[in-house]
Image (cartoon, rainbow, N blue to C red; front, side, top):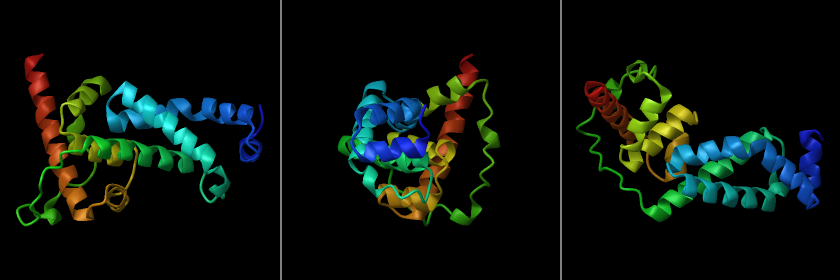
Length: 181
């Protein structure tokens, strides 16, 4: 197997075999990112394919300041967000005056203790799409509030508010799930 920098150089020359090899190396991880954001296998597959096309089309712009995986992940996240925008996410209106953002709990997520990852994922699928998106980008993908705000075109305080409310709603859903069991 060729090393990654060699594969990237070959992709810049348009070699399909090198593109396929990079796809093979990254497709599972990038599908997971798409699925976490979109919540649908079909949508995730479409977004992932589109993101790889974009990446191979723009591979000449990759300068190596970050890892190739990080560069590709940003394209994948942005493509997934574009898919969500086409679906017109229903954002809950936030009145920052009613929510004192200084009183938000720390981000240790202790309240997400659940019997299984599947239980949390099932509860996240029942959240409004805006809530699920903010939780996914922050908790799962590791983006900071400012980065998320930039990605989705809103303010950092709105992202923090959405995140806080999403966490509260997720905890409520998990509690209801446990009562049923």
